[in-house]
Amino acid sequence: MAKKSMEVVKGIDLARYMGRWYEIASFPSLFQPKNGINTRATYTLRDDGTVNVLNETWSDGKRGFIEGTAYKADPNSDEAKLKVKFYVPPFLPLIPVTGDYWVLYLDEDYHHALIGQPSRKYLWILCRENHLDEEVFNMLVEKAKEEGYDVTKLKKTTHTNPPPEAEDAPADTKGIWWLKSIFGK
Image 1 (cartoon, rainbow, N blue to C red):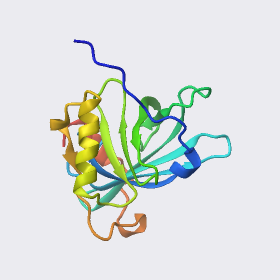
Image 2: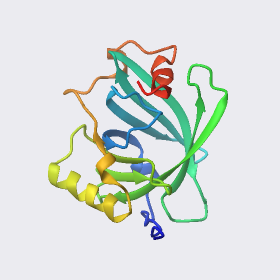
Image 3: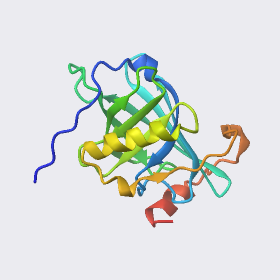
């Protein structure tokens, strides 16, 4: 049975979407450490219309991060389909890695979002706060299921309260978190 094509948000206001988003839940991936907590993304609109992406997570008391760029997959479309490009490994950025970032759901207040991509291998539930009402969370999980995602793979992200600031933890300057994540740690 062929999977239906995914519906994505149309008419997203990228300027309004900018700022910090906390990862409430996601599908585990090779790109993040298994023991990562306080995972978040900060988006900043650049003058050329692209978006600076800063992904951060805390693992073993250290802040790991990677920066990249997001841009509209089709500049002429009103669909919220973006491409995100990172260079890896983060400690010696040589290899460009590009992925899809599709906004599948976004509430009218730009408070919480469901992010996926066409292969359905990756899924994120994001929120402007580091916690999300259980009823809203369940609604987003249901939306993901309707889009053909195997939501049994969804893992909630641990957050501390208050969330840490970048200055609160030593940075993982060697990219150890990234290397460990490749080996499933």
